[in-house]
Image (cartoon, rainbow, N blue to C red):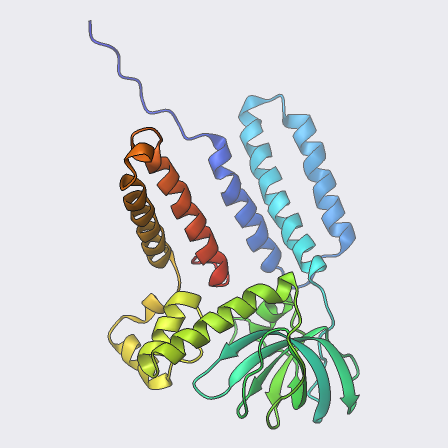
Length: 312
């Protein structure tokens, strides 16, 4: 007897949960004004009441689940916006002298870009001093993450989109905790040695690794190699970037699945080759699973080394 072929079972409803959450997040950021706390509370209360009323009705249960997922995404976006809230500079200021701690250093073809925190105003007037700023320097040596520095800079509020619907730099700066951007007037003076801490350790490792790669391979090839290994693309010359764009290869500079796959693959085969060379281990233990675990750990480490960007 032949067995009846049943149609393919529909996908579990749980797979639609990210879609609903993403829809709620998109709805939040699509609002023309910021919703108040009472609005969020009313939405959550309404979703809870509707879920209790219609949960026993199977046809309406899917609608209730979709509504709950959308509400969850909306509330999560509002919560994240509230958690990262920090002071933002209101207007352009005259030159000021600041002391600050370097959080991140991004080398560029000329100078670099510093993310600074623990600001201390030494000279000048700022109505509201942000907790974190980003400053571009054009001359002098780049400090290392964790160093305490003094600089004279002009600060401006984070710029908004250049056109309606364009990329919003002010929104990106808000979620990174950056309340002002600007540029230094002259080199940066290093006051103290490098500080330690979990927030500073990883950027410091990334900066040192990129510098060592560029020192080992001076010129354009070293800048590109450092970008592929650490995600720091600022040191690549504009002419080289234009050449890669013209050749259709600029996407290779964005650390994504291709790079993670190469790192994981190399780690997997290297570990497995080493374990195969040990017959006692290879014949008694699941070395393939061990190699896969090592590859996962290497991919995770590479993820954080390159800054844990969305494509990665």
